[in-house]
Length: 347
Ligand code: FNR
Ligand code: 8K6
Image (cartoon, rainbow, N blue to C red; front, top):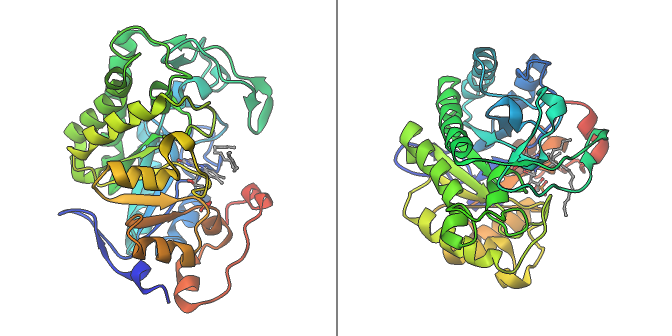
């Protein structure tokens, strides 16, 4: 069944995937106290190695990027060694795995890194409290100086190098879901008056600097990016955001990334200022490999791929509920439904 999903897919000259399924990046908050992947995480990823590509849970590039408890990092030698064990296990089973590189920006909390402040494009806070630690309220961030921005760019590139050292096949830069990079891309959170704000070109500058530094460090074939033009999470949309993403997607089109991934929980959501679904908007403005995600079943994914709406599909919650998701889909076996209680354990 769903023959097109089980075809090999050539991302570029260096990477060919066994099928068109990706495991979506899924934060599980189960790393150890030093933010090192555990044996249970190794087993969890190895069980899902039949996916054409696993994208790791979001992994912080440095201490002040942390916004939730026990999210793994990739900035110490112990963390790199811990990830090396995970990537070896996935490779041993014939799979491939990218690291998702993360800095939460204003969604970070000093509680996690004993810091004084959190960095963001502008001193505009996000409302609310930290999931799983509701006693912590978000605070007003410090607007990053130009020197701090340059340092962040270097730290993304360094994290990408660390990911390669840890045996990852590539990295997906987390530019979605209202975290640091996305905060530069929306008028809601970017009020800067320097060359990082106010115009589509300026607001795209940080994202493109991170992408270019990563490409310089590890190559475009191994660099991917996730984006949320719709601003549906940790953020409010502004119709002017559309011009920022029109510009950014055109620029990205010249860079031959491994793939571009929409950051969405539900791809059936329609946005007036994007003329419909996020995946369709991205398809119209970007010619490279596109990954759709957000509420897809094998059936709806196969249809979307057959219709040319995107090239690969990422599967999130169903992959939590079904470690053997790929085998089940291949054999037509019934899938277990996902429920939020499943987040309590790492099966
Ligand atoms: C997510 N999602 C997510 N996205 C991301 O870019 N990095 C992350 O670390 C996470 N973490 C995460 C944790 C949990 C528990 C959920 C449910 C989701 C979003 C995820 O990658 C995906 O876009 C959505 O889950 C939608 O796909 P499904 O679940 O409908 O297939
Ligand atoms: C506890 C760690 C959380 C990490 C970040 C990822 C968020 C996961 C939340 C799962 C719930 C899904 C529903 C969300 C909907 C959004 C938007 C309209």
